[in-house]
Image (cartoon, rainbow, N blue to C red; front, side, top):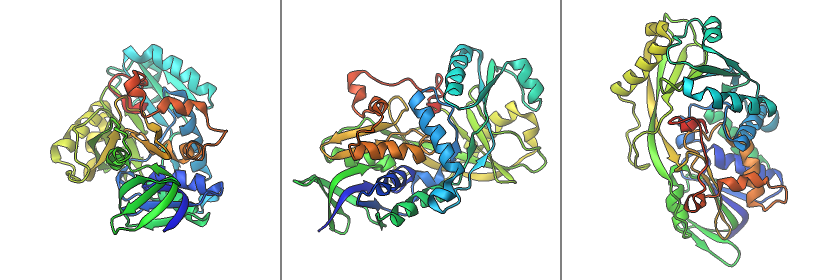
Amino acid sequence: METFDVGVIGAGVHGASAAFHLASRGSNVVIFERWTPAGGPTGRSSAVCRAYYTNTFLATAARDSIAMMGRFRELTGVDAGFRRTGMLFLHPPDDVNEVEVSAERLNQLGVVTALYDPGRFVQEYPEFNRDGIGVAALERDAGYADPHATTEGLFRGAVELGAVGRIGVRVVTLEPSERGVIVTSGDGTQTSCGRVLIAAGPWTRPLAAQVGADLPLTVERHVVATFRWAGAEPTPAHGDLIGGYYFRPEGEDLYLVGPVHPAPQADPDDFDQEIREDEVRRLADAVVRRVPHLDRSEVQGGWASLYDVSPDWQPVIGEVAPNVFVDAGTSGHGFKLAPALGKHVADLVSRSPELDPRLGDFDPFRFSRGSALPAGYRGARILG
C-alpha cells in the first residue's frame, strides 16, 4: 500500500491549489480526481476574478489570488488567460450605506474601489439605464481567467513539485487508520494518507458523511448564457444586483451572463447540463433592460453547471473528523478565491503555526452553533 502525507480528493481549482501549496512546502501529496483537472464544475465556471467582498478575509484572499493571476506563468509555467477588465457593481438605494462602508474597507486592503452616485454613473457610462441604481462601485483590478488553464497550471505545478496525480480515479470510501486515513478507490486500490482534504465540490457531503460529518451542503443547478456582440458595442463587465445577473466579456467576440440569486437544487450525478431557451431569454431580457443597445447582440449558446452551497453562501473549511479536512461550499464564488486560499488551506491541513486565525470563521460546524456568516447584499449572497 502506498503512503502519502496528504491525500487531496478533487482536482478542481480548490483541490489543485491546495495540492500546489502543500507540495511547494515539501509535503508528499497524492491527488485523486474522478475525471480530469477542472473536469467538474470548475471547468464550467465563469472564472470571474474580483475581490469585491463584504468579508474581509475573503476580500484579502481574492485580492491575493488576483495578484497570483498577474504572475501565474512565472509561478506555474502556464498562462491562466487572465484579463484585467475592471468590474462594475450596480446597487439599489437600500445598499448605499453598506456599500460606502465596504468600499472604504476594500480600499484600505488595497482593493481599489471607486463609487459613483447615479448622476456621475450615467455620465461615465451613458450606455447603461440608471433605473433603480442607488450607487455603483467599480473594482479597478477585477477581471476573468480561463478556468481550465488556471486549474491545469496549479495541478501541473503540484506534480512538478512532487505530487502524484491519480486521474480517472474515483474515491469510494474513507476509513480511519492508525496512521491517518485509508482511501479506497473504485478499483479497490487502497492508499494510506496521514491526512485527507476533501475538495470535491458537490460530491463533498457524501464523502464527509463516511467519517461521521453531516455537512449542511446542498447542490444547485446554475446557468451561463453566451452572446455575440454582433452589432452591439462592447459593454464593461458588471454585476447588476437590481437586475439579478453578472456580465463579463469572453475574448473579443462574446460575452457571458449568469444569475446572482439561488437556483433549484440538483442531483450532481444527474442534471440537465444544457441551458434552456427560457433561461437564455430571462438573462437576455435582464441585460437589455440595463444596457438597451445590447438588443443588437445575438444568442450564442450556454450551459448549466453546479454550485455546492452552504446555508450562508460562504465556504466551509476546516477539520471535520480526525485528520480529515474539507474545503467546499464555495457557493458559486470559489474560483476567484482558490489560487491564494489554497495557501491557507495548506496551512490548515499541515497544522502550520502560520495559520490565519480568521479561517476559523469558516468552520463547517458553525451553523449548529448559530454562527452563520453574513454574505453579500440581500438576495445576492454570491457576492460573499
